[in-house]
Length: 429
Ligand SMILES: *[C@@H]1O[C@H](CO)[C@@H](O)[C@H](O)[C@H]1NC(C)=O
Ligand SMILES: *[C@@H]1O[C@H](CO)[C@@H](O)[C@H](O)[C@H]1NC(C)=O
Image (cartoon, rainbow, N blue to C red; front, side, top):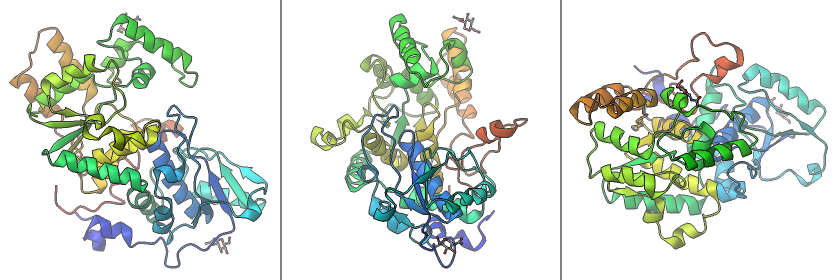
């Protein structure tokens, strides 16, 4: 089943000794400056796409500026979050990266270019023209500017090398992340649960199932006030039955118990502040008392320097999620996709993705008393998730019948499943 031929040996070998061509990058006097937009994981994948673009257009990449205006409101710079010298060094065989524009170009006129979403190599061939008249091209957004599919294999592998090896977190984040992983491992096997039951997510998706009327109002008002959220009028019942709502903490408890996890299982909650706090978390805790958050795992002093930096805290969650025995996202999103892809890359580590639509149907039967929690539910839930555990498979294509940009939008993201380009099947799973 090898799709990698002589590169079978290990994943790590495949990606670490493959500069994109023998000569490496030629120091280019064409510069590209980038502002990465979005939350932590959207920025991370965007940065690696810009590395691939810099390679395609033969430009020197200036270390990207990070988003300080997004919902995350984080003032961290690139080197607060990432190991900047390590990043530059790790990719020196592929792309020339500099911390800043050379003095002589700081005030040079820049071309400004919004790249078209999901573009392929031929688009970027045309983009090269921009440097005919300017030495510096500025790119205001980095999210999803590169196609998932159809790119040269060395470019795809460069994206993986960038995201999974070169773009490491800064030392303080890596160090604390490692410590927390060790503390968890000393207790036994653990699940990392990305419990997307945070206020912004519930407001954005309009999911109010199980909440009080005043809570539902509070979320509606937040949605109405947030101008960049386009959808205002949302029917929570329809959202839920369509499988578009994050599982509630209670539902997560029922789901995991039905999947056969026992009361003694350790669960790390990789998330921000859970909406309603203990009122809702306690339902999950009644199923799984060994529930830990970073506030429990780390000391106040350890967390002190990260607080007020949402991206840095999210980076800790990311590290722990990648290293967990099982990763379970209660909702889809950039973090869920990035962690799943990373775990696939590291050897198809288990990611259990709840079938939210199917589960809501079963939970509906429980509510109506047509089903009870027990062996019957357990067998239905287990069967439903047989193929949702991160086993090796090719990236899904777009939804059948979709066209144009919708087609590209519905493809499975490259970083969610970089198979087959960056992963060899070693027969171990
Ligand atoms: C890359 O750019 C440099 C100068 O900016 C040029 O000398 C070199 O030929 C270019 N290489 C390719 C492959 O286009
Ligand atoms: C929401 O949708 C459900 C199912 O389609 C419907 O029964 C209900 O009346 C809708 N609620 C509102 C407030 O429109």
